[in-house]
Image 1 (cartoon, helix red, strand yellow):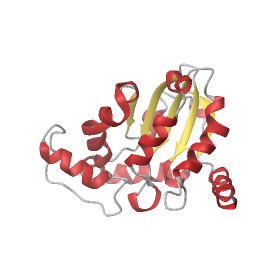
Image 2 (spheres, one colour):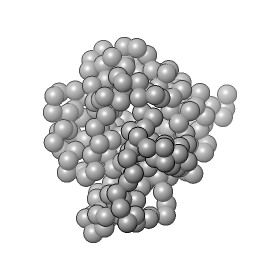
Image 3 (cartoon, rainbow, N blue to C red):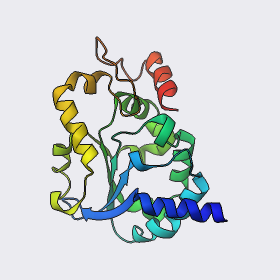
Image 4 (cartoon, rainbow, N blue to C red):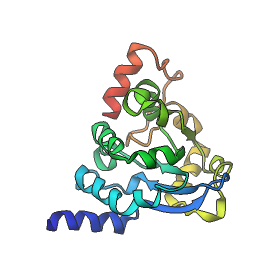
Length: 205
């Protein structure tokens, strides 16, 4: 029990999940900071208990949207894994799922796009997948979310500045999941090809 209390306190301290601000349709925002997620130290059960107690009750009565900041996420440090994400998604109450309007995915990498394009509907269903909106720059975020009502960490803006100087790396190989940037000579393979499926599973799972 002491271990679970410690993990729950850690989630509070890191401020990974925060309900803050509204989008331009007036829906409250659940902000998720992926880089802060302690995947190596946190159990899925504790995370689900935390969400059940502190987050889901506040999202069960009115429509809301999610802002997920993928900036700086690396598989070895702060990515919980596909099976864990599916387990968490399955545990979300029906009323909360029904209230979810949009998922704004900020700074998606090439690997993340490939995986979700290939397996997104299989793992999360058409309901969630159809609400996904990719945003490659913070400036695009303000087309959907009220700018003065939500906090964006400095490292997210820093990533935007890096991409201004190295846009090709962002478009063709610099994935937040990958600590070793790569530049590809050609655009990514089609997501419905066999090679894309194999690549997606290897890099994301």
